[in-house]
Each structure stands twice: as C-alpha cells, then as structure tokens.
Image (cartoon, rainbow, N blue to C red; front, side):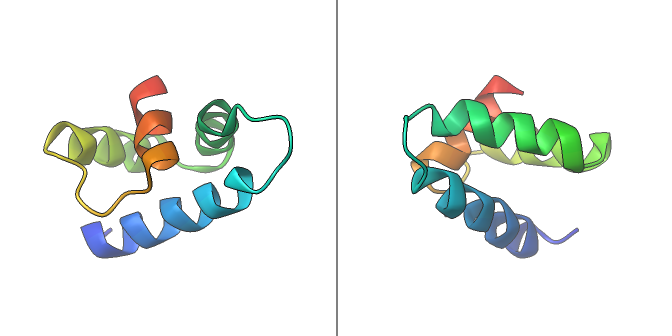
Amino acid sequence: MSPDKMVLMVNQIAGFFDTQPGGAAPEKIAAHLRDFWEPRMREQLVAFVGGGGQGLKPSAEAAARLL
C-alpha cells in the first residue's frame, strides 16, 4: 500500500478513537489495527513510524509504537 494511503487510513481510525470518551486512544487504535489489518500492513506502519512517521496524528503514531 502506498504510504499516503496508509497514513490516510490510520489517521481516519485515529480520528474516530480520538473522539471517544475515556482516553486510551492509542491502545484502542492499536487493538483495532491488530484485529483488522493484515500483519504486513502493520509491519509497514511500524517501519514507517521508525522512519519518522511524517503526517501521522500523535495518537496514530503512539498506537504504531504499541504494535
């Protein structure tokens, strides 16, 4: 998947969980990614964050670090 599409997708997921009450958005985002993204998509995200993670919402970046 292209990095731009990946960033868009994970930021959309983060946008949803960022609005939920109770905090813990990074943990909820990471759980969603574990449940619904294939392993290679998660690996690509983790590698992207390792390279700087440009354009990711803070909660999305934090979630990737939990993976």
